Length: 124
Image (cartoon, rainbow, N blue to C red):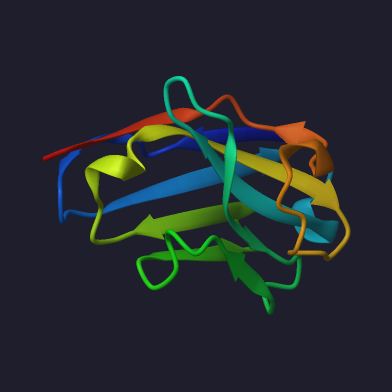
């Protein structure tokens, strides 16, 4: 599975961005997909995950009620809608995939396939 993340950019605090993760290669339909982020000098952290069916979702507490993860199986994409952005959301965002339907994998080491990352900068 090859993943391509896009949609990052510069936005003011309180604004919104939508990230997209496009998959190619093997079918995406049997992979749970997650978003992670890494701020300068910090560890890569879990943001959100969605099951291959799209039924189950899991969010980090820091983004719950602000971010929404979704998937479009027909287009082989997973999106992350980010609202009410804060300066502390500034990071490089990565999408990742793991075979199966578990959305409770929150360690980067649980995921096998990774996209290249897209930078999100939130100004105050």
